[in-house]
Image (cartoon, rainbow over all chains, first blue to last red; front, side, top):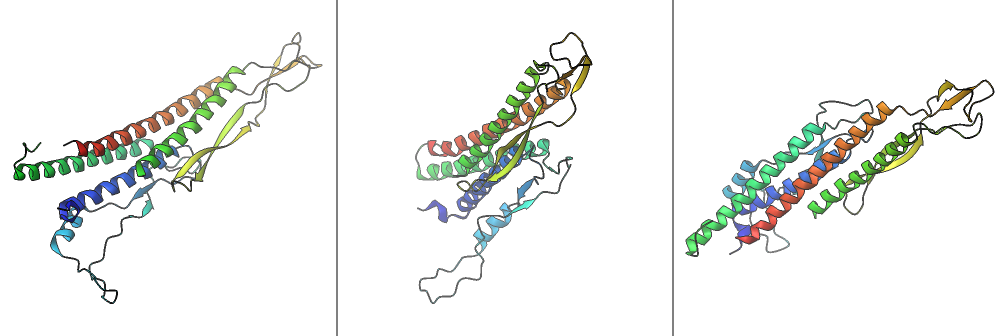
Length: 137
Length: 136
């Protein structure tokens, strides 16, 4: 059984990838809190519900021959682009990083990541229970 | 791996803040360092500037200390005729270090450092959550 083929697992994996990416961008912001002219960045938000609905609702046709046309469902690109944040405050040296905001986002990302790992564990636990091996933790 | 990049970015920022701290310590330590010979310049305050450098290995923007530049502001002048560094008129030039400003700068460096430590903490706990998925 390939877990990656299940819509929920695939969506969880994508969300975890996005959260990891976001953590890197936030680390960059915090690191550059004193760099002149630095603009705070953030990732475009990932729509988990939309992601899940898309994966569950429609099937992507498989291309088995190079002459086959690609499916009409666009494969969402993994690297959600970075964009400049709407500045909350601006230092006299042109820096737009607000450290409080960044720390809030860091802990937000962390909480979301925990949610995803818990969801993953829960699902695996349910599979295990269905297989009759131990209790689903 | 992304988590490694996060750690690298935060670590680079911590290194930069440490350099800043070193320069602040230097300024504070030399707040009273006058010259030895009459009319010579005393210790001149130093400043740290940061810059952003694209790291090709991680693709992230790392913070680096750009330059340590001297502060061009004027020296403090006091009238102490008996001082070894006093000029012909009896005036001694003292360093342009204001301990109050240095302390404020110190606090700022500390706060930035703390924020980076917190980011590393969070990244590490996220990583351990991911590893924890193996354990069930």
